[in-house]
Length: 381
Ligand code: PRF
Ligand code: ZN
Image (cartoon, rainbow, N blue to C red):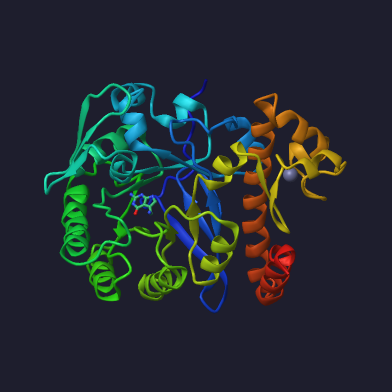
């Protein structure tokens, strides 16, 4: 297992080149220490240093160039020290392309009622063994430096999107104060990009304050956090639009936790460049596949009589080799069914982004959107 060579040696670990635009939508190339990423991009989530049900070599075959992992899970096991000793997560899992790590706070807060947030940081009781973990901005960045991802995330104070009043304001302002501690603690500025996370819920004034504060800190890219948490769709879109309209045009924008096909298409049109979500693989484990005509529930008995692939023309392993009927039969019996549907869903999203991106380059985004929406909502009349 050779250590992976970094392909970029310039002093800045991120170069972002916009190739074409259509209104707010952009087709770009993001150059990172482990190679180029074409954006808009969907990033599959391998929470614990592994994809659920999909190997890294399969991710490579799907053309994935940027994967997501979580600091909290990796800090718990195998731990930052071990990962540092083997030369980082890339080496540990033998992944030669890019990795992004989330900072951990969001997972701690969303995974448990047993977490407490103070100005110092997040304290959390592990659901695994009841041990307590303290995660201050300094700890999150230290662990992320040890993990060695190409993009690392600021520790943010995340509250429910629908929270209003002083607690939302406190969370948003604390996120900025923690960012300054993150920046001070960050020891690998030459080869790891620290992305701040815009907070402020769905309140335009708080978002504006957060945007202004973070933009002043001049990062290589920015994330939009605190959304996709049960807020109204219109509030969601308005907030994304406000953020993309204000963030610098020459830097990548990452919308956290969004990966529903219609949402990634709409938000790409609003100027988002990066997405991540566990939805594609989670829904696959419940037997649901993404198709051009919307969701396909392979558990339904109708599938037993369909002797065609999940999606005609799809080049994934599942569609090239198997019928819906066979996958329907497998679901009740074998783990591999979830695996096949996961591979298909990941391939679907990766290809969706590539097609959308190409349509921006070809000046055909409108046609692409018309076609996508017409097919996606076909079954709903
Ligand atoms: N912050 C962090 N990770 C996240 C989010 C966030 O706001 C979201 C959005 N709900 C998903 N993942 N650090
Ligand atoms: Zn497929």
